Length: 288
Image (tube, rainbow, N blue to C red; front, side, top):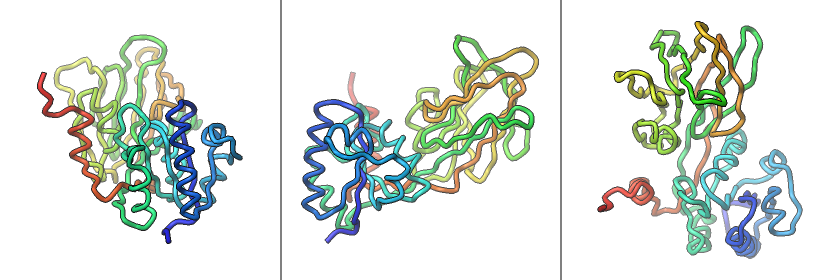
């Protein structure tokens, strides 16, 4: 007996390893008696029938992602609203989020299907951009919301407020607003700290700031962030969500960022060790 009845498979678009893993996964889940639904990419590789992502999310009680962290980020943004738990099978390059190895897939999925797993909830950020009273767009991010210069190498100027309080005005290549999940991504490469994924907090990390005193700041997710683009000189920028869904910005535009009320549910094998993930992925202790 399993705790789940209907599994949705999300996958990367191509690759022999992906196709081989999908076939093994499909056969395994079928043998467990689960109903299986496929997203477009998985259906193409399995020669099956695809459902739209939104329809898939409404009819499953477990999502299995075959691919890398990017594939899981896409599924995670979709499934958070539906509170569908996700298991990631690692066929990517890094694998901070997808931690089931293909060689151990059947053994670890058997345990997870029977309820032997660790569950962890991940924060998401919701950002909205405004031009006066006009709403330019909004989206959610599991890793980070990033403000950055558009189409050329140049600094942009912006002012940051937290809970209505003025923080600073700075010139930089941009700003990363990151969740704890995203603290090991762009925020880390920009000099930010690593936050444990259980923390209910966000990090603001400037990208190449034009000052020696600008430092990352960690704030509680109950806080509201507002960023105003500088108006002293023309500026063109983009607001990105996990590296996608860009919103073009110009001088005077405003951004409002809050934690999303919904969280992504991520399931891990029982032996999951976050610090082991950090050691292995970031090569801590490796001798040169």
